[in-house]
Amino acid sequence: MLDFPIYSPIEPVHWFDTSGVRVFMKRDDKIHPFISGNKWRKLKYLLQRALRENKNHLVTFGGAYSNHLLATACAGALFGFKTTGFIRGEETLPINDTLFLCKQFGMQLIYIDRETYKNKQTIFCNYFESNAEAFFINEGGASEEAEIGCAELIDELNEKYDYIVLACGTGSTMAGIVRGCYERNYASNIEGVCVHKGISPVYDCVKKSSQGLKNWHVHEDFHLGGYAKTSADFLNWIYSFQQKTGILLDPIYTGKMMYALHHLIKQNYFPQGSSVLTIHTGGLLGTLGMKNRFEQIVL
Ligand SMILES: *Cc1c(COP(=O)(O)O)cnc(C)c1O
Image 1 (cartoon, rainbow, N blue to C red):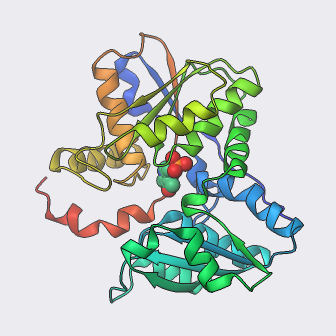
Image 2 (cartoon, protein in one colour):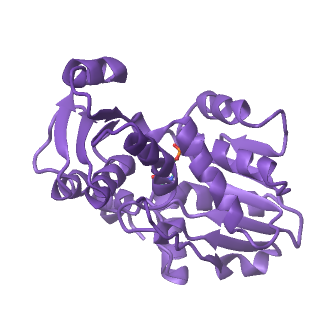
């Protein structure tokens, strides 16, 4: 029923060729234009559970630029679910590209003030308690199912990479990768780049799934001031990377991951000759949401 072929090739990233570190990228952004990257992996087993429980209405949560909301809206349309998204904050007009696309896929949008938004279970109960068809999906899809889905990425690796590098929001994708390596006996070092201030939630999330293993590390020095914060140097770096590689990054997640990688390589964090697999977790609409910021910077 949830038949969805995964197309996520592994490509070399020649931009780093002179550094002595071999860099590759797993193109999860190519899985789907809107259910892209880790968001499909995180949703897959949640949707299967929804089907098993005879639910036909996905209810979830996110900020106005949430890649997860859009992925849920599109996956819902594709697999025959109704969808409702609770949006943090007030409606701002005109509607942004992410929410516009959510609506195109038939998602009902409900705006919730920031205080009330903190308790998602209460919101769900207030609106859907008597609706036996409604299925609760946490913000970002964070769940046990999400980790199991992300762990499957390891099955798609035919070679050994010394390091796996990825961006972390909640950390559940990383937790899934750590767990996938462990369960499949795949030896690698997993390097998470935290994209917001304060790594403890990410750290705790990964630790919980790590079976006591220590082959992972969360980097806390690359958030550039906090979630969705940027700097002129950083945006310029993204510009030049994109223009020399043809790979689009977003300034919220994958941009910070690759910028961190660039710095870690400069600091000789990776031994010469080692191989690094970066994961492009998708989210290219993040770039569109920030087009004004890009246009303000002087090249
Ligand atoms: C949601 C998202 C992430 C963060 O995933 P977590 O599992 O919350 O750590 C990373 N990259 C992109 C592009 C995303 O949309």
